[in-house]
Every structure is written in C-alpha cells, then in structure tokens.
Amino acid sequence: MDLKLPITLVDELADDEVRARGELDMASGEIRHVEYEDYDVDTEGVPAARKDYEFTVGMLASGNREVEFKVDVDALSGRYSVTPSELLELKGRAAKLFTQRPGK
Image (tube, one colour):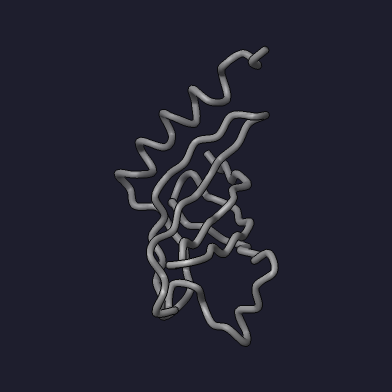
C-alpha cells in the first residue's frame, strides 16, 4: 500500500514553536517534503539543532478532528520520521479518525 498523508509538524522550542507542513509515508514512517512556515532553515538551521529545541509533534487532521503523534528528528540531517511502534499506533488512531462520522 502506498499511502502518503499531509501532516503538520510542530517543533517546540523553549519560548516559541516552528510550524511546517510535510508528507507522512504510512508504510515507512518517513516524513518528506517538509516546508516550514515563516522559518528560514538556510539561515537559522534545522529547529532540532537549536539549543532551545525541546521536541517535535505531528498532527494528522480530518475536518475539525486531529490526531497528534510523536515525531523523531535527526538534528544533523534535518530528517523527520515516526518510529515503527508509533507508526503502528498512529495507523489505528488514523483509521478511527477517518471512519468517524462528521461531528455536529
């Protein structure tokens, strides 16, 4: 199965956050095509390499519902991914998200 879903990434910093959009490959857990919002990686570097970096979460949305999940970041390469165990859990949660009836 070749399923890639659009996600939102949030890099949490001590006093701020950096938001980005990306594409999650549900087969491998790799996150590709990351595009930051109002953040220049070329001048500021990857958010995960900053001293005030704390953690990263991803969000998968359907309508007004969201599923939040942990994202790993390689600070040297700037690559985002989801661990196999987190991906397995996310698949179950995403299935529920996409099969629920729309809320009132």
